Image (cartoon, rainbow, N blue to C red):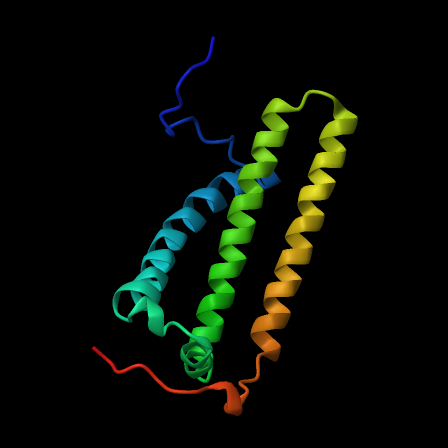
Length: 139
């Protein structure tokens, strides 16, 4: 019988194992992500006109190291939080050890590839000044 989770399951037994860390990380990263995503949505879609969210806007934003670090932390937390959830899902529902190992390996590889692509993009971004064009008027 399928039961509905309340999200208030028992904590893993205290110790220095990976599952205990994963349990705490899932909750802390989720809370931090909620705040960071709300800030991101406010900046990109509320305080600025969506039609003004252009290359020039991003280039101006990335001229400040704070926003690059903010976006890198958002990337890191979102990827690790999501892949941790996928890992738990695979562990709960895939019964065959070989299939579980392959799916976990694919998930880890995807985490690594997307993390590296995002990090490389944030580190190496250099604005092309000729492509900046007209700026939108502030509200």
